[in-house]
Length: 107
Length: 164
Image (cartoon, rainbow over all chains, first blue to last red; front, side):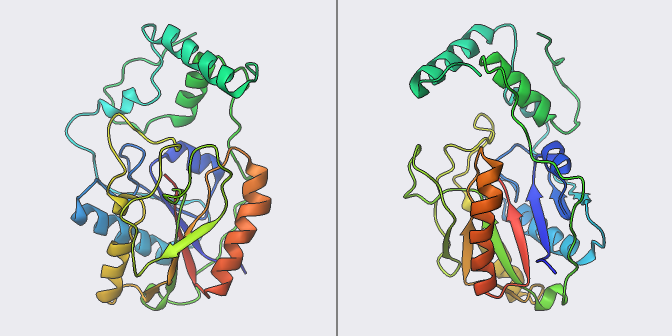
């Protein structure tokens, strides 16, 4: 028998595509899966919910979503890895620079 | 090339689609292949949470790691939580947040608080670093077995994995 595990994270699609035994999902920007910076109340609540799910789940792919939000606005959702007509040229140049630095072609 | 509509919705971010579009815009022709498993294992708890010895695992790097260096499984001491870890190479939202508060991804003090409150049995003496790698082969065949050895050595009952 393996070790019981729980994943605490903020990328719902990636973790569910992977498939894990237990997943506590908090829908806030990537980087703070255990709560907003300096928000000890949210952090403690998320960890407490993770322990509760660890104890209550009885089958794989058990996902639970916490009620916590980042703030009043939703603009963070569209800005991550954004591709727009305005930044296409800049992104292409960034990619070329990366490949040149690593010395390999685009593939 | 098609663009996602500007979102005002509160739906979860489609990170896989977003990342594919982003790397195509950078000029990479092959899409990243995310790990996926048709069958997912499940191990029930052997005891109640209030009696468990829990291990905490992060994908952040130790401060001694520098970009470009090979990564390996590492550990630190939970009695002395780190004040900072190196997250520079990881894919988190650098426009909207920061990782200066380690508790946001390695909640040692929060877990210690729950131990003190009697809600969790104990936290293992070490926390563990499992590298975030492009190669799933390295993760599965090298890093996970190394992590597993440490977890068995420390006799933990369950594991909380917190990927950034």
